[in-house]
Length: 598
Image (cartoon, rainbow, N blue to C red; front, side, top):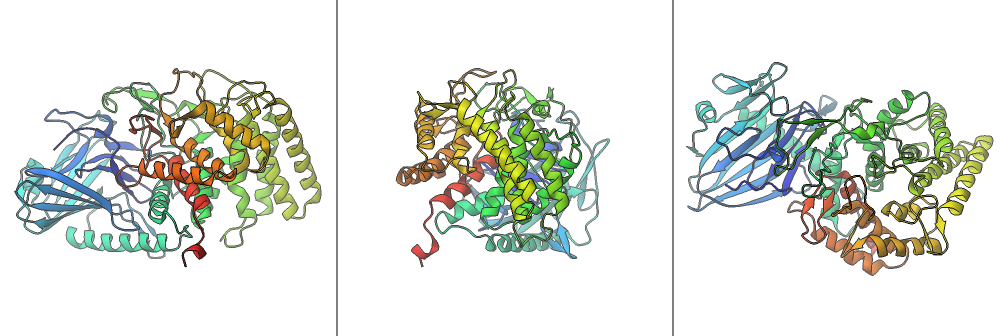
C-alpha cells in the first residue's frame, strides 16, 4: 500500500455525516457526530508512517498491485476494487444510509462497508483506528461476539460485523472466503445481523439516490458530470437545520506551505446561495426549502439587521478560530485550524446573497411552504442593512483579513438585494414598497457606475476608485446588473482575463493579500469566466475551457477549491461546493437543448 496523501478521494455521506475514502479503500476523513464534528478519521491531515498511527480505517489486500474506484451509477454509493499480484481481487462498497422510513428521512450517523471477493482467494487485513479530540485521545476498546466498542469520555462508536472479531481487534490478515460487512455508528445494538442490515441499507440507499437523480432536470450534455456535482452538493447539506457547508474538510492548504489553511465546515451564506441557485436550476428545490428554514432563523436572530458572512451549521454565531497542535497537517503543512475568523468580518455581499437565495420562494408555486408576507417583512430588514452599508468598506467576498475597501462586488450584491426586493414587492402588489426598493436600487447602481467604472481602462474596477480587478466582477451579468451585450461588461471581461488569466485558469485576484501573491487558481472563478465568455458570444471558447475544467477533475469527477495552474494539482478544501456549482452552471449554460438530440 502507498501512503501518498492527495485529494484523489471518493466522497460518501447522508446529509448528516460524510466520509472521504482514498483510491485504496482507506477512510482518511470523517467527522462525527455531524459534518463539523470531531474527525475520528483524520489521516488526511495527519499522515504518519508510524506503526501505531491512528485516524484511518483501511481494508488492505495482501499483495496489493492496483485499484479502481467509481460510484454506482447516479448514487452516492462508492465502490473501490483492489487487485493483487496473485490474481485475487476484492470489492469494497462504502455508503452512509439514507432513505425514507416510516414517513421520514432515515439518515443515521453510520458508515457501512461491505467487502466481497471478486477473484481468487484474497487475504485481507482490516485496521480500524479511530481517535477522538482531534487526535488527542486514543479510545478504550471493549468487544463482544460480533461487535467492538471504541470508547472516549464523551463518545462511543460501535462496530458491528460478521467478520471474525478477533482478527479485527488484532489486525490479523485472514482469507476472505465470501463477504463481510461492517456497520460503524452509534453505540446501539442492531435489530438484525450485520449482513442483513448492511444489505438492506445498501439496497434502500442505492434506490433512494437513483430516484433522487431521476427527478433532476439535467441538460442533455455532460449529464454524468452534472449529476455527480449535484449529488455531492446534496451531501454538503446538513439537513437537520438546512445549513450547507462550504466543504467537508479543514486546513487543506490553498497552495503548498502557504499558511492559507482554513476550516470550511461551516455555512457561508454566499456559498450556500450559489448551491441553492445551482440545484434550483436542476429543479431540485428541496434544498432551497430546507435552507430557507435555516435563513429564517439567521435573520430572526439579527434584530439590528447585521449579518455575519458565516455561521455554524446549527446557527452558532461564534466560530472562534484556533490552531490544533495534535494533527500534523496535510502533508505536514501546518497549521490545522478549527473555527473561522471570518465570522467577525464585515462582508457586505452577504445581504444580496440572502435576498437572492430567498427570492424564488416568493414566486415558485411548487413549494410546500411558499414565502409569506411575514417573510417579506423580515427580508426587508436585510435590504435595509444592504442599503445602509453598500458604500462602506468591507473585507470583500475574498475575506481579506487586514485590508478593507469599498468593494465593487459587495456593492453589486447590495444592489441585487434592493432590486429583488422591488420585484418581490411588485409581485405582491405592494406598490409603495416596490417604489422604495426601486429607488434604492437605482441609487446604488448610479454610485457603482460613477465610482467603480474606469473609462480610461474600459472596465469596472475591484473597488471604488481602485485600479485592480477581481473575478467577482464577472457576476455583473449573472445577477442582472448589466445585460451581457453592454460594452462595459465586455470591457470588464477583457480586463479580468488580461490580468487574472493564467493559461486556462483564472485567479480570483492578482494583488498581494495578507499571505502574499496567490499562486493557485480559484476554480469557481474559472467557471465564472466560462459563463461570461458564453454570455458575450464566445461560446466556442467557453466550451473548450469547460471541457478542460472537466478533465481537471479527479478520478471520481470532483474538484477542490484551487488548482495549480501548471501542475494541475488540486489544493484547498474538498469537495468544494463553489467548484461543483460551477460545473452545473456551465453545463446548463452551454448545453444544447434536448430537441437538438431527440
